[in-house]
Length: 61
View 1 (tube, one colour):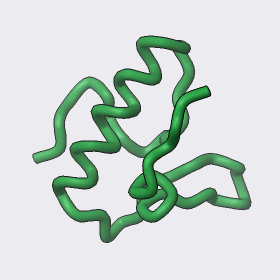
View 2 (cartoon, helix red, strand yellow):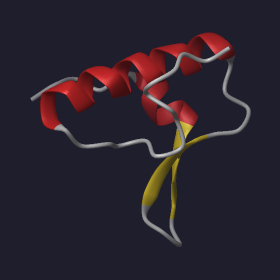
View 3 (cartoon, helix red, strand yellow):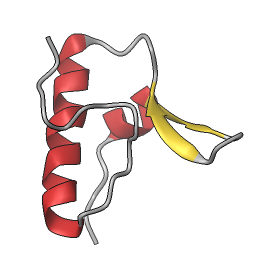
View 4 (tube, helix red, strand yellow):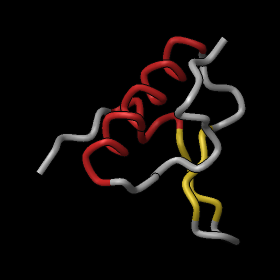
């Protein structure tokens, strides 16, 4: 089982209306980059998305 970094829990939240995990709107740029990279790696391994409001085909600018 993989270890989930603390920044994941700190900077994402669940939308309880939809049950989807979202990145918070005030996330720092460097943390957003880490979340995107983590999401890309996880998608390559499992073909499943966890965070739905990030574009894994682009990097954060």
